Image 1 (cartoon, rainbow, N blue to C red):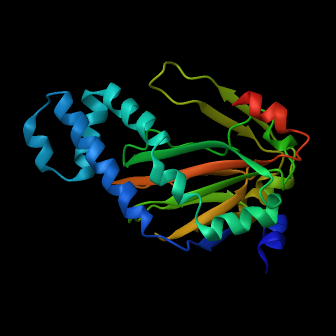
Image 2 (image 1 turned 120 degrees about the vertical axis):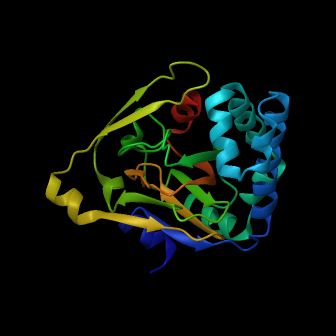
Length: 248
């Protein structure tokens, strides 16, 4: 099945990156930033001898400001920009949105510590109040695992990008917290159960999906730090372009 057809029917497809070697640079930068913030905070020096998940857990509990600084630095990190310029990704976006006729809405690197699951979300769409009004080929999310993990996975509802759902977005409690998304699905339980799939990605793969696709976090008890990068794109030709760009 070709990518356009797969996107039309399922709401997503998986591709292999052309140049996955950039992932290691991003992973090393994340580790460097975590160590740096621990040193700035002048916290327990023995923590620096621990593994990366333990360091990040300690940082979250004792120096929230440091975690926020890491996120802000990574937003502008050049190797994340270049990651989304991978030839396979650009070729797919050209097919879906039109060659060189799309705009990057958003880019971020996420650090999810398990089993804390602090940022895990229930069913949601990617980040707009009226995401179900976005045309399938107008807005796309590309999601990429950066490090090796047992939990580079998420649940999706195949075909849900075609449904009319209502998403509620609750604003951040403070500058260190995240938005809360809740999706009221316009499907019965039987449809949800039948079409729910667990999508697992390997390092070096990317998930390309409609921003209207319903998905949620995969909760796990494994102790690890999952590092992922994501970016969102919209076609210049979209009737929603200015509404969506203003919402950013």
